[in-house]
Length: 318
Ligand SMILES: [Zn+2]
Ligand SMILES: [Zn+2]
Image 1 (cartoon, rainbow, N blue to C red):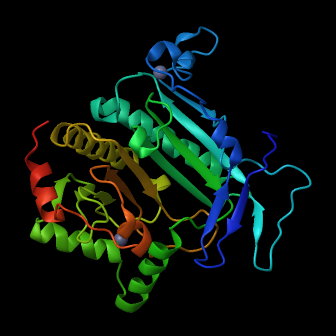
Image 2: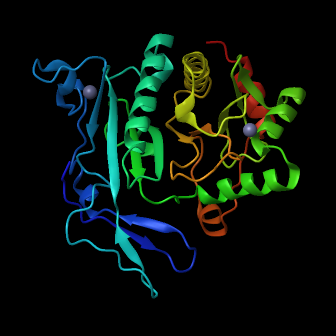
């Protein structure tokens, strides 16, 4: 790919966070959003004879936030206003049906989707400039999905940041102080009390975190300590597919099909040791909107306690 990008990463001198300035993305779908399968830019991959590529298609994002850096784009580092090109890859993973989301998938369909996540991760991780790969899924307009056809996205970047450094450092600190993994410790305590457990199988547990940032937030984590999502075995992939689709089905049925995001947080692929991290998948249903206090004070107010949320979802029959 030699696509030229003008997207920039800018460092906020106050928070220390990087932001992506991707003005091209504003051109996405001007005016009325496409409605129905007839107008869908993703359905064409499965309906036209030339493009029909099977059940799942992976394409470069037409309006990428990150793309391979073109010539003449050099970092401007130092000073108050630091910036650099948003170097990386941005891909879209499209599943065939326009209307069926992961909550409606069979086990085999979900396994196939996770296999694509894993194989794209492994392929992108081989790129020299890539240090971090983020896999996420937006369901519904409130969750930021600009096209209603179910799809996931993969962003691969040279930069390890985006809210990830804090949990990475917290896991390292806990490990160095306690000689054990923070997430393994949480899993053990939660499985013992059962209070916030939504579901479990041989390899994974789904729970509502003790201090959830959103009502009905769910973390799915491997029971066995593992820092790298991309290393999951065939058996673990099947167990992950099982717990992911059943948890999303419970959310769909029990919470009246809310919009949601989910994302995978896994150790960076930057050739550093990250053994103290424990990879996991977080689901954030949009059951409430962040208001001034949440945005300004950075402290979320949730109206359903995680224990109540877990108890409710446990009982939803799918
Ligand atoms: Zn479609
Ligand atoms: Zn662990």
